[in-house]
Length: 278
Image (cartoon, rainbow, N blue to C red; front, side):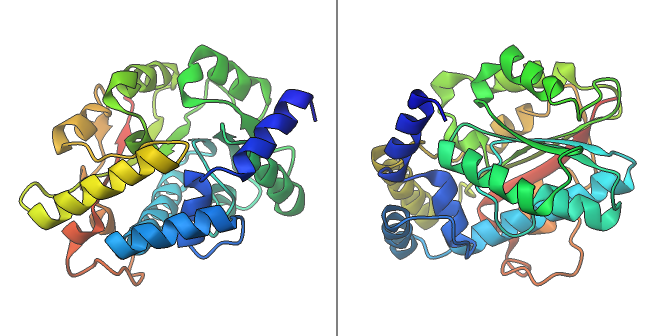
């Protein structure tokens, strides 16, 4: 490990990481006291965030299964975070054993280190890789994906941006960067995306969301904020939405699993959608 990477790793251990907080909410073990304390503080403000994490992870699994059923065998997961329950390669290999390739991408050094350990233990190195890159790297990131040798740029890809873009403030213009990645996708590819969203009529939830956003901005390596539905829909520009469109997390092709928000989908406070490039 280079000195710069070692320094990044040491610094990351002492700062709250959104990836490790997410892992803690899901019941994972790849987190530290600083992350656990922060997560518990947020749970006191909005207890539903643990169920949001679970509902979001369940959407990811359904979307991966859908992509495999559609014949896609390549996945690029940007902002994959820490390895936890239901990793993309595990879900894909359940549906199509030995057929799928996955590239995990994260810019958080501990997430990267744990991803490499996970893949060494549970994955096929000829098909599954983890790289250290940032969403905003654009062409550099995409070249790193291709350099892994496990992604064929001429075959359809499922590009995953799940619970990622709500950590990108408006001034960073994440839509512009995402558009670059959309343009790189071959025809037949899918964009899988989820994003925090609060029903505008739910004033209590909006106020709690503001509190959480302020807390994330102050204490974590990434601020978090919801976006209006129309701004989330714009991330799919130029693609054909797959039914049922952009919907609350538990409403996207439910498969009968126990979802805490099945009866009240808006409480999920997250929208999800999948779109196809034609």
